[in-house]
Length: 268
Image (cartoon, rainbow, N blue to C red; front, side):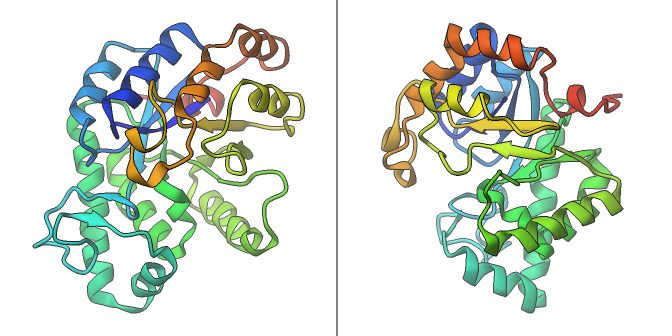
């Protein structure tokens, strides 16, 4: 069970701590350029059982490098936009944009390494690591920083249009020796994983290693981020704290943890 967007807002960070300490949350994915990252790292350091990974942001969020270093990637305030299809084309076809992209990805790995937290996993905000150029850069740069596991964002019933990209991602992770989950839960109901939705999802988990990812916070929607209108963050936190969810998980999935736990990776 993973919480995305760790570091985005103090309300997210508080929820991650509560859900790990008193609920069923095993892991969190850290946005190293986000406004509340220092608070997130402080909380993670006092939660040695929380597995933390890098949530690479290349869309709809803040960069680590300043605008002057990556002017073709971010606006004047240093934020990535949300036109992912257009940006994906530029990543693929324009070498100067690709060089800036590589620099930003490296900077995010460096920022994560500077926290001193063990690197449990890597994924990308809005699953941008499905893009082959983004994936290539993560794989090549990430090895220097101990990359061993990544999220495969394959959900049961994934759209046909995404399946070739998911199959390519799976093949490339396998060829690179990077461990990954078999399935995820949380894409179709992103921002809406309340107790009943989570309980229903748990009754029909596919076989294999499944990552359930959520977006908990102690407040909801635009309070956390302007782009999250309609997100029910507080309801997702309540689901992670639910005794009914814990009881069902103990019955059907007694072995739980982060990527390092589920995929038997060496953390040293």
